View 1 (tube, protein in one colour):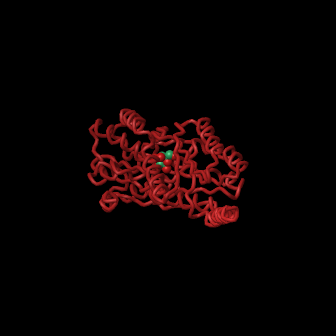
View 2: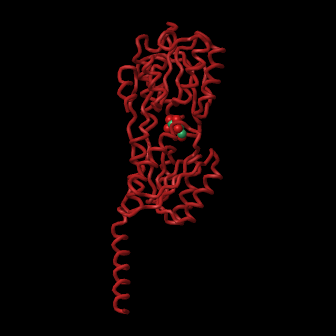
Length: 323
Ligand code: GAL
């Protein structure tokens, strides 16, 4: 009997060793912290991420930071106390990265940052962290190019300049900074003259996009050639105010966003938006999941994993609508 027990014990121990060796295969406990659930793009992203990881058999817990960094830091502390194998973090504030890295490093829990990029300096703080995202400069450039490639090169009122309104996301976020800067740079690089009429923060939100566009159109009326929205949620709001002001996209005004939300792609197809830029939530969430699994298995990580943006206009929108 004793012999049998010893044998069973030995077998259990061996299995234990085997399961450590094949850590990549074993179901992982994964904590995911999202900056806030009330964000159209991040909702698509987190839904896909959860599906991708749970279909592989991993145990995923996702929490809503509600736009509050203190709350998110508490959530990360709970995940640490819960001994998750790996964390995926969409920071509320990019500037909190160093604090979060200190916490996860002390607990030795590898962490994949997504969507909101920590500084290159912060990324040097530990070798078990990685960033998965897209280069926001590229999305801004694509927005500018979409406008520069229109028939009258973004100049409806024919005064020789592209007179624009800029709906800015959250200015703390590099996505907002780069899209604001590089959309205009692309126009200038195409040899066009630009004139900023209006630029205000809309925090990525549809209601704010609507409100700001209504204000800009009330103030500048027919002077406005183009509305640039740092994301599609704000562009969806802009569509409502453009229509309410009796303006018509493709006839006397242009409107371009980023993300390729299904609603926005539909509006591009209908000609109610000039274009958008695919922010590939499927590519990004799958890469984030894959990197998290590698990190949990102790594999060496790159600092950055980047997924490309894609221009979406009426000529190719059907392809994206089908997806
Ligand atoms: C951007 C996206 C926005 C918003 C933001 C949140 O990449 O375009 O719609 O989701 O991330 O950080």
